Image 1: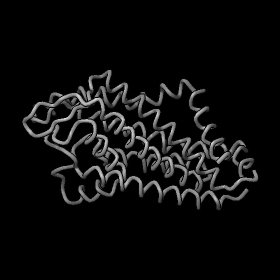
Image 2: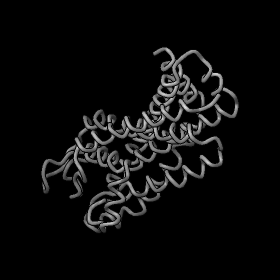
Image 3: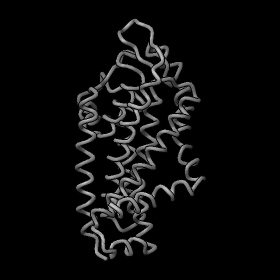
Image 4: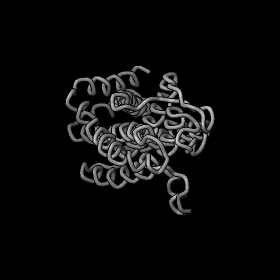
Length: 265
């Protein structure tokens, strides 16, 4: 447990020491929120779907967590390049503890980034609400935020483990960046972060249902804006979203541990 804590603490300290990274990493999601949220807002409202900022905010929160967590795997390549990874691999501790500590650290950092993005969304006008039935007025529901934190943490853990798996199997920094771009952007755009997943064609429905982020975004949106808000409701349901994310976290953690154990000193 000591090794897990130390590796976790290293990731968290590195995050707090890089103030510029904290601010810059919020730039792209904030741009999406402001440019698309206010730009497409009138069209969304004219279609009778309500306030687009309300719909989109859970998506950009998920986007922030996705990018921060999965790119935590890139830190492993930096450690490999500068020799720190070799020092940890020869330490008299199980490699399983090392990779778990790194993954938990990356997930913790991504969770904090998600909470910061939630604060930005609140400043932009987003409010967590609950609507008990269609046609009834929606009321503010600030108690939804602690529940949303569960989904933020699960998204962070899933994709931090995925990033660790990729970082354990790739030695080239350029290869990691190319792979991440081809992986991360489709995961984000096909998750329903920017558009509802209902009434899609059969092929798009299958693809979006195969996207693990879809279940995280659905959980965040269902918790934060209520079951009946915008007549979209839950695309899936609370237990399916949470259970699938937990299963994927276990699978990716196991995969990253196996790949990390095969790294040669």
